[in-house]
Image (cartoon, one colour):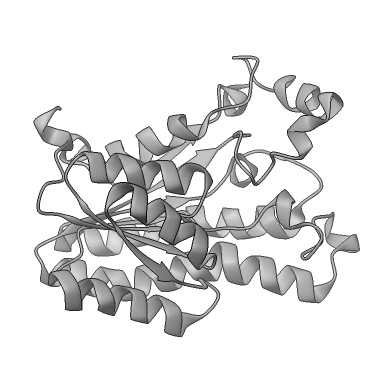
Length: 255
């Protein structure tokens, strides 16, 4: 293992860790020596993932500030520090039965507010509670999950797009504000990734074809390909990277 990606002695929180790229990233952090807290509204899923890697599972709804505050407080209580926060939790197309994903004129207010609460406010509040603890400990790294929707026009999920665009802007201002306290904040803008968020949609050949048409590499991504980038950005290998908005999209945003 490269010494610059050794997380021995470090404490890492991954939200949305019960499945997809969050679960994979949690495993990668643990394999590199970290103490990992796996936070998810799906406690059973988070516990199953935690059992696999020797981590700690917490039930966390990122739309609730009290849950996020308790999550960070638990990291401090158990380990006395927090070094990394991967703000990965979010809802997308797989949540359409509950939160309608549509253009702005077809999006009910309740759905808009719920999507923004999870995808943007949850990131902001996770940062709000993690940043002071990281700064007191001498520094840390936050990796936020945005989306290709934040940097390219992708019709059909306007509340999601607005929320992810907010994550990009929030990342930039936090990187500027907290860099002097040795806390780096970066952001991943992933393209279509084969996770449960779009898993059912990918079973439709027409949908997958519509996605890959925009991707120079000609395929959707894998959860591992996003998780590896999150681990890199959180590691000492990225010690001079701060405020970056990094597409992980097979070249979609280059077109």
